[in-house]
Image (cartoon, rainbow, N blue to C red; front, top):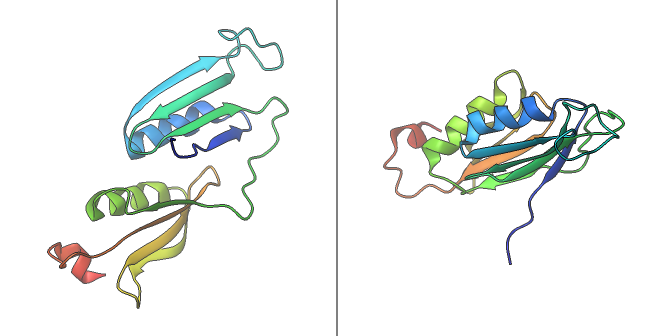
Length: 141
């Protein structure tokens, strides 16, 4: 059984959002327009379905009624999903033009984590365990 994959509906910004996530996380992006999928409920150039396959997997499309993306009571956790250097890089890229909700920092229990809301309104929890603190950046947290 595979893990759940988030499917996000954007108010006309799905292509921009998925291209941004590809820049942040890497991976392969495939995009199908409404015209390609013969959908008439969206403008022809709107994203009917997009898929990012990589270290982080996401699905997205443009919303047929252009309602704003609202993710209340939900965040995407990327805890230990990559090495600490990669996770710190992802945090910084997601924070660019976004909002740091809680700095990525070492916690009293020994792990590091932080929260960031990206420019599209998606809230991310990024963190990792420390293993011997061989990484000088990890010791500084």
